[in-house]
Length: 366
Image 1 (spheres, rainbow, N blue to C red):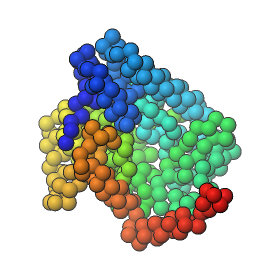
Image 2 (cartoon, helix red, strand yellow):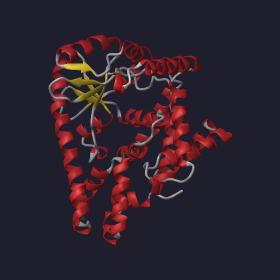
Image 3 (cartoon, rainbow, N blue to C red):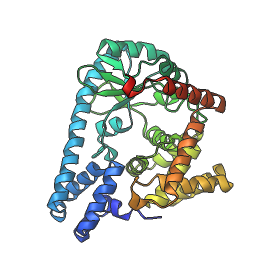
Image 4 (cartoon, rainbow, N blue to C red):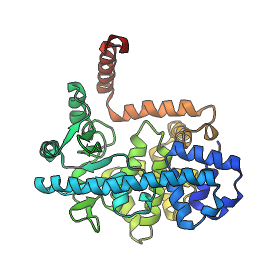
């Protein structure tokens, strides 16, 4: 398989950027665009003070993406203030997930991280209260189909996306961290009980460091559409490298994974960090991950999954693909649906969606 060396170069060794040829720069930009990490690349170059090594036409493109990410971060901070009012009126803490949490905490994973929507977590028993408060503040559902609404509320881990009528920002309201009907289970109350306040943002919270890593790992494990899988893996790398500077982080992480029964997603993520990104993990952590991965994904099934993930977690670009990549992505897409729903529910859901598609008016009939 083609290596990720070119894309990782500005993230790991920006002092070597002056050695790249025009053709390599062109390829790096194309790979980075597919992975949605160009703003992160730009931030790393900025931090290293290496813009003199970047061709002007490439620099303009990278700086544009960097400015776009910064604008999204500014909008995120403004939108967080608006959401905080809603949650204070409902008597609930505002809990941010994923990119929004990384950015507001000032984590390395938030540097140059694109945040096109905001993910929040609310207690399932307060979901109706939160939704009503959001609607009164101008948020509306982007999907009014009765079947889809029932499907999301009964089986999934989030509501259909909500959009603000005036500002146009998109909000994903999670009432769990993984689908309720999925094979990977977790009680969100355990994570909500361990949320941490975000410094400088009174009333705004994030998951604990261990839970942030586990949530990201579970997302990679259960997600069938991995076009941005490389970005997700880079997120996990930056999280564990930053949090791992604390002596108690790694024992707390593996213990938490055992408590939630999320050892398999964590072990899988750590193994791919080691294999694909060559992340400098502590030897004892690497050993735990390899042992757990082999134990929890044994035999030919585990080897087949590894072969698919090694392909699908690379940016979706032809320079990083081989003749099996499309098949690997298709296989993981099917697996994602299989993990999300039991067979009887999946069959009924697909049949219902097919019937709805068949009954939908054609463009020339509208």
